[in-house]
Amino acid sequence: MRNLVLLIILCSAFIFNCNTQKRPISSKSKRLQNIKDNDTVKISSDKVEYEIIIIEPGYNYWLASTARPEGYYSQQFMESRNYQYVIEWNSRVLQPSRFSPNLYELQIDYQPNIDYGYEVNYKLYNYFIYFQLKYNQRLGSFTPRI
Image (cartoon, rainbow, N blue to C red; front, side, top):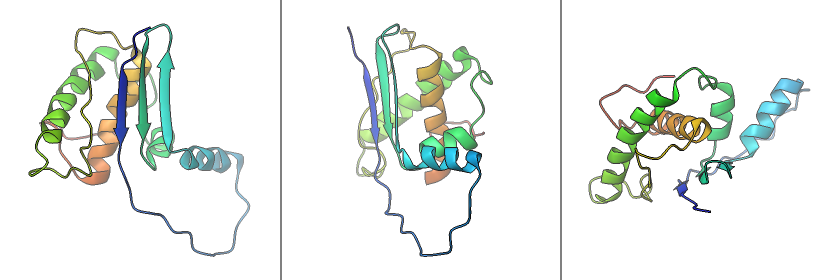
């Protein structure tokens, strides 16, 4: 089985909790908190034989609470944007004197002629949107939108 590993590892500052009074939380809040606590998103499928691993504090929570739901964008739209974002991302990885190597650590191997499936494209596309919004970066001519 071929494995394509799209590994994005970004370091973020430590988040310190203050010692405040705890209130009872709803089941929806509990679900979102569990998602927030899990900083690793891994999508893999034997059907498409590719996987993507995203380790980014806050991304999983943002994906569940803020991003457009699955089905909102077509796979073709996301593939097109992902390819453009990957080209710019990889260009920045190769220029550590111009772009922070703390933000752009590893290249992403994304080929436009391979069908990665909807889920991989959805998670990758939304990661690029999240990244641009969180770190105030612009990976292309498109304004990142939710």
